[in-house]
Image 1: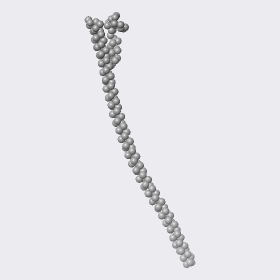
Image 2: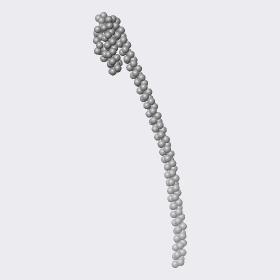
Image 3: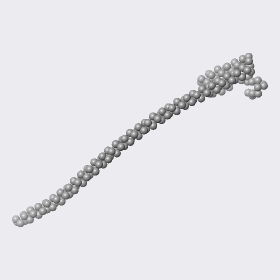
Image 4: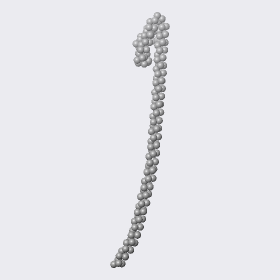
Length: 164
């Protein structure tokens, strides 16, 4: 029986040493895998943080560029609007001046035709009508409307070659 106990003890020690070293090797291998996984995860996290920071910088640049584009387009629109207003004002003044010149020319022609003042009175009336309507509807519409209301047939003489 003593030999059984010695055989059992020796087997136990041998198996323990073999088994423990195998378990220890397995544990060491598993520990290395875990450490490598932790290092890999840390590297991936650093890369993800760098990418996130790069994305944030790019997004900030994009917002700045969008704001810059918006500011430039607003300035361009304001400049275009101002230019359009100036051009319109200039065209309006030109049209108004042209109508005044036409009225003055017609007044002079009428005065030459009838020095007594009859046609001149009609022209003055037409001029006043044009001025009143121009302030309401614009110079071109006023000119056409006022001149349509005045009968200029009295100004035409038989020998001037104009048909009314």
